Image 1 (cartoon, rainbow, N blue to C red):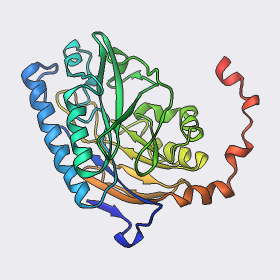
Image 2: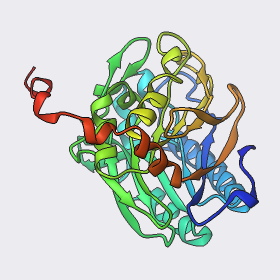
Image 3: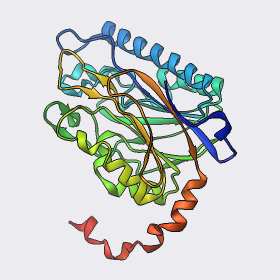
Image 4: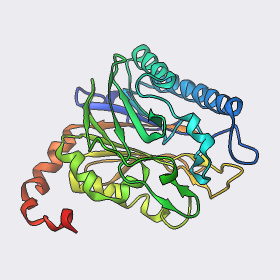
Length: 305
């Protein structure tokens, strides 16, 4: 486990947060899936995350975020309707119900990204937010949906989000969620800050290559531009049979100055823990008055073009 901070650092405005980066151990031998294989994949990933969540509790974590579509592989590497069967209702599906039990048991806020079924044929890439008492607070649906090589065929699986950029007042902090490809769009990152987010979590599934250099560029820039903390999560390893590239881990936390304060390994499954001092948000915003000095009346072309 990677860790930043210590028990002595924890004050009333300190929040201990965690990120879990893992790999999928159950492979689809030739692509596609079936009910038996789906159950094996979900059971394997659920067990792994339950174990990591217990570890997080033992380390004093108060807010914990999982990776994008945490309970399965990144199946968007192919376009097969059989993966529609892996979608679940939120909050009434079995995975979120189980996560509510865990959150209540450990008095921990959980950010749980899964494949959501709203109705037959209507699916979203979604993260549910569960408070420390097990209460379901709401969800964020990924707004920006890619459809690009080498294997990010997400428009086949997900409708664009329709819930805007909500924030959630949890027991420990006000948090927002941005999912993977969203991070390339600063407009939503700004909206989360204006809506009151103190910490923004970005669960992802991204591989080495064209955008890797942006991984530690864009999100620290969002943090600095908006004066909040960011927790960025990526899975690790490669996933057969698609092998679209290496999921390079490197999950991290950065502070409101845009400085990375804790970073996980590139290739290991692990829990990353960091203590976030929420007082730093006021300190930074008192210096950099970006919200005061913004000129929304001059930005009309942004929504017209």
